Length: 248
Image (cartoon, rainbow, N blue to C red; front, side, top):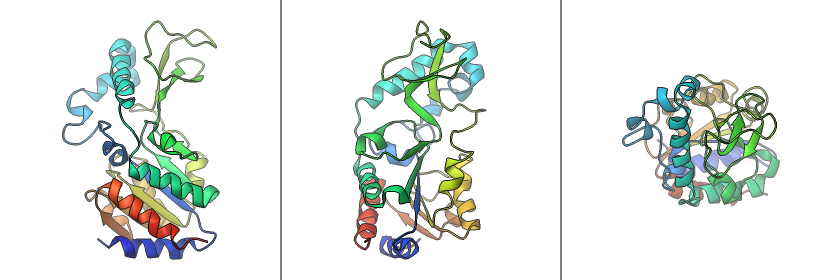
């Protein structure tokens, strides 16, 4: 484990005046805002069988149960706010603009509410609905019910999230392009969910600088060039401040 200052200096050197930075965020970012995580002690998978609420088969068996599960997550999201880590990444995007790519495993909208705009939601977005037939995607901040129908084709709506057995979004073009950046930074990730868990290794194979900011060691910590421990709400703002202090 290295100090935050050491990691920030390495990032500044790798970025220079034209280098690019790709950030991957996981559940640890949103947990500090009060969003319930799916894994870990007290996580949602301890209360629900993932086969029942997070698979296409579960939705076919009991769509009402699945919709109620995600409706509860959606309602909970209204009661939380972005934390200092979300806000710091938005400031970093404001400084680097197109030189920064933000990939998130989180299905909430806290990055957007903090001001980030260049976001790749690889696991979908809970505040959107998707048609099971024509795959039209619609903004949907409220509950999804069995009576709701797609305005385009009339078929059933489902949450616009990636379930087990489904392919994450943006894997064909946007994410591979983002992994070409000079620096790969992972924040609040467990390192257990693929393909996100393989991104650090891919960045290392390309000779990129890899940095992890995490409360605890992850499954992939041994792959990173620099690992900084601490809560995201503390480490991310300090890290961003040090990076921006030397940016042109």
